[in-house]
Image (tube, protein in one colour):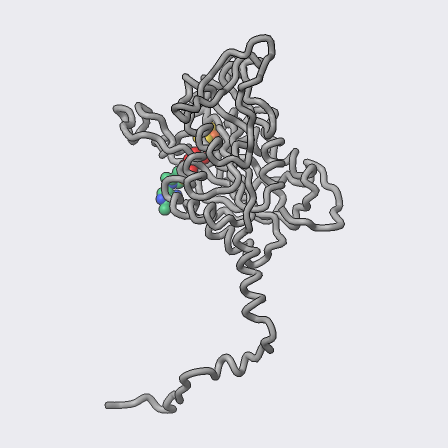
Length: 342
Ligand SMILES: Cc1ncc(C[n+]2csc(CCOP(=O)(O)OP(=O)(O)O)c2C)c(N)n1
Ligand code: SF4
């Protein structure tokens, strides 16, 4: 996030383009696009100071649909382009749009370095547990047993968790949301307010190749019992406040307990700056535990671009720029007028 004043307020319409949206009808990407366009005016930012950078995939078509600057780059390389943009002009508000394949297969290496460097940007990782654009091959987040064109007998490798990957890479802001959930704008605002790389994993339904893969916690009848929305300073309760998480201090694990008569004493209180709690939350096996959603970890640290700018200005301090001196520094030689013939 950047502090740019004065800011002329914008409306959601100001962030929409005239481009034809080319996602399948019913794709979760539409809901995320709407949520972002609705949220931007509330961030007090302007389209002309905003850049959306994406890799390749269905989700990566996003920059076409935002009336901002944008780069639809190459597969897995949005972090490299975003880093260049932010270093060239740290005042720009940079958003990365990526998929589970783009960010964690071909782009895993780049995503890791973006997060550990802590470039100030928002990374919206659309997780549909599949390669949508290339017609439904399994991805690094697909569950064991996923049948796809590239795993016709079911996948055998264990999936990666984007949030666990982010924490392991040294990310300072890690969050989760659901494409159609009303809380998505709240998570986007928190991600934007955080100075540094903010990872937002968005569970996104691919209606064509992986429909309802998140239904066990996103479908209406399952939502309350299986979604735990964490809030800093609040006890971690779910299922209408009837269940909560406690710390099993002997085993250093989490446990689900019944909350009787609303008595939450003993229930773990969310501390978003506690990295250990974040690790426990993202590692909870779904089924025995609910899906942890919201801002799981938020503990700011100095950003990459601020350190680079500071270092460059310190190195340049007291020096007078002299281009001629620079080009004639070191070894010089004369080029023969006539080519040598030997
Ligand atoms: C270098 C390179 N390798 C492979 C591809 C093919 N390819 C395009 S998109 C994609 C995966 C997209 O999956 P994901 O990032 O999950 O995005 P989604 O389409 O599901 O939104 C692949 C493998 C490519 N475009 N470039
Ligand atoms: S293939 Fe899936 S992810 Fe891609 S646009 Fe269609 S529904 Fe969306």
